[in-house]
Length: 255
Ligand SMILES: C[S@@+](CC[C@H](N)C(=O)[O-])C[C@H]1O[C@@H](n2cnc3c(N)ncnc32)[C@H](O)[C@@H]1O
Image (cartoon, rainbow, N blue to C red; front, side, top):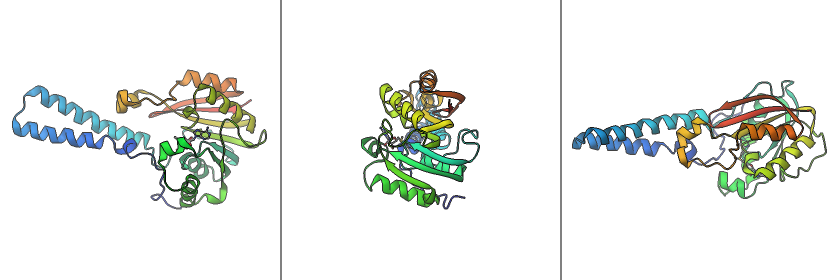
C-alpha cells in the first residue's frame, strides 16, 4: 500500500493541470460584463463557447491526463507474473516507476534518467533531480525496492538480458527518430527473451487536439504506426496497443 496519497510531487508544470482555469475565469467574467452591459447575441455566444470549451478542456487535462497524479498501469498484462527486476527508462521524478512498484509489489526497479537539460525542462531546476526522485520513492514507501541510475538511454550501462521487464513513459519520444531507434535497440539488448516492454508515449490524439489545439506541438508524436514498426524492428512482438487521453501505449514482448 502507498505510504501517502497526497505528498508526492511529480513536478510537471502547473499549466498542464490547471492552465485552462484562467481562461474559464476570464470567459465567465466577460459573460457577466456582457449580461450587465446588454451585449448582442453573437459576442455572448462566442464568449459562452469559450467558457464551455475551456471548462471541458480543464476536465480532460486535470482528470483524464492527470499528469501530476499517481499513474495506473494502462494494461494488467504487463509483467503478469508480478515479480522480477524492472528497468524504468527516463524515470524523471518517479511517476512511472511508482506506478510499476505499487502495481507489482514483488518487483525491484532501476530508475534510469539522464537528469540533464530535458529533466530541468520538464520539472524545473532546483533541488538535485536524484533527490527529488528519491523523495518521491520515500513518500510512496517503495525506496527499498528502487535504485537510481544516471545514464543515457541510448547507451545503457547494463549487461545483456539484465532485466525481466522494462517500462518507459513519455521519455523515448523526447529523442529524435535516430535517438529513439537507438534507445529501443538498447531496451531490446538489456531485457531477457520473453520479457515485457511497456512503452508509453504522448499522443496527439483528439483529446490533445481538443484541449491544447494548435498549442500542442509535442516533438514525439510520430503516431502509432511509426512506433509499432520501430518496436518490431528492435526485436519485439507487439502484444497490445491502446490509448488513454493524450497517451498511446504499446505492450511488447522480446522475441
Ligand atoms: C516527460 S519525463 C517522463 C518521466 C516519467 N517517466 C513520467 O512518466 O513522469 C521524460 C524524462 O526523460 C528523460 N530523458 C530525456 N532524454 C533522456 C536520455 N537520453 N536518457 C535518459 N533519460 C532521458 C528526461 O530527463 C525526463 O526526466
